Length: 227
Ligand SMILES: C[S@@+](CC[C@H](N)C(=O)[O-])C[C@H]1O[C@@H](n2cnc3c(N)ncnc32)[C@H](O)[C@@H]1O
Image (tube, rainbow, N blue to C red; front, side):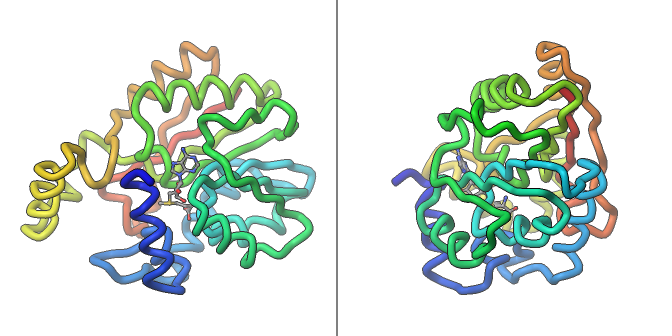
């Protein structure tokens, strides 16, 4: 099991709180329902979700976002690699409109799923730059013309210091760098990375500021890709 896998598996075994399990916390405490609403309203709005849409939720975790969005779509296919979170999602999303796949989003072939929209929320930080490129190439290729992909909660390289703004967080960063060689948040991106990538895909890309009241607005951004 790699570091990311054991991070989420431990969170599931430590708490039944769904927001805690997927790392939606501020200083270790789960964010409130209002924060969840801000996220799902943004996804609904940017993807212009309707009950005719077949949507993929890449890295759906325990389904805490998926469940809220189900009624705004025809169907959602959740893809999640972590077994503990996948099993939580299977219990939580006991709904005919949702199907779940326990798989790595980098290796699961979505060609046969015939989806027209997709989102991937707070997942991209777990991918390297080349994995992100490959993931976007594969996903955009399988979207119909004008199909939409929303990438939410991307760590912003330019505003990293807004996150590492307390002594505790800076010490955690230093310790983790010394132990693993990696930033504990994962990969930080420049918005221009997605503009360049979209260009290569002949797709269009819009970089979006997060809602000002969202817990991550000071150090993450969103991105909407149109095939
Ligand atoms: C911060 S959680 C977010 C979960 C969910 N999207 C949400 O916002 O509640 C990140 C999720 O991405 C999943 N993940 C990371 N890399 C993945 C990969 N290569 N394939 C599938 N899932 C992945 C993790 O297991 C975890 O569930």
